[in-house]
Length: 215
Length: 215
DNA sequence: ACCTATTTCAAACGTTTGTATTAAACGATC
DNA sequence: GATCGTTTAATACAAACGTTTGAAATAGGT
Image (cartoon, protein in one colour):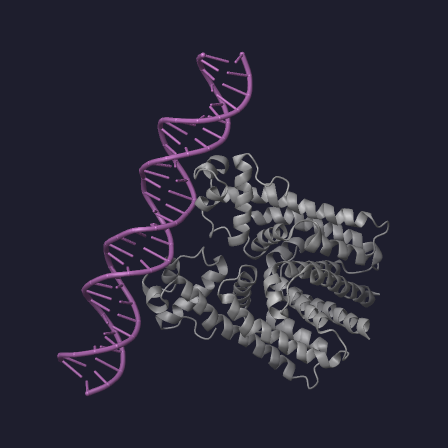
């Protein structure tokens, strides 16, 4: 993390609020809990953000979006090593960025949890999530992959495939406890890298089928 | 639904509690809201269930699990039409059961939301979800698919593939609003059936790759 | 009809919630 | 070092929270 414990109250509030909101959800966290964790006074939230909901939105604007950009940058950096990235490289870069690359496990869980909440129960913040991150990311990936696919490929099918890849990555990111329970094994680094291999090969087969169908 | 508004207070509480918990989450729903929706007295929850948390657990035991069995029965009924179901039939049966078959859209959203909450932020109820539904369902599907795969296939890879299929089905189930936003189209029945086709073909290609790799 | 067990109800409990208010501490500028 | 706007602190407040209580209502058995 950039600053373990920021010296200014506002940033400490944002940091702790993000952590707690991602762990328990908006309603389950009290402003007292946040201000205590941020080691400041109860009134600090109202002074710096007006109210609790505005703090929640600010978490997305000032912490979640930058972090999403961090993931995107990792993704791009990973790909820049290849001169002519194939679809498999793109999928691997994407999965790696989310599952083992861009940040610590806790940070990633925090990130995904916040997003997932907005996906399932949108608040105002969903507009930020979709317009700032999800839609641009879809666009990027689609345009990267498209050259290696037939010209006449239905764009809907491609988009659905990208959603499918995202669904796998998200699922293996957020359902770790249940996956551990079902498979009876820890989600350790070796297993994680096998999961990434699986996602890549599964997705690649799916994408190959895509272009076969069409031509 | 079986009983639109049950005549007994306990069932009305369970029904409204399920609806509200799935919409807003445990903490965001008050017992006053539930009892008002169930058209009964504030004290009813404590009389019938002891406390709010126990009501939440009872929702899973008495409403969620039976409904999951409903999905499973639809799945089995769908497959029983085929004498020798292929993997594609199994995947299609599974996706159909979740996305357009077993129950109404609202009911399914309610069902998936409750599960998703437990996947991401487990409470006591996660034990019910995993042991009563997810694990048995994994077992069933695995044993149905296994015959059509090579003998020496790594069981871990098969399990990961099943998780991947589940991830797609869940994602297309719960992220409908965002998918609509990104694709710029309604999630109408025609689109839904194309989504199922996509899931089946994508998953099938993934599974085929699975057996190719191994032999 | 009476008694008993079960269920419903209105009212109140003590806490905790988000927010508002006021004064004190701080930091920069002159 | 006095004065300014900015930030923190202590405290207050009404509203909402989950839970408890004891009385009223209801249902079933005799």
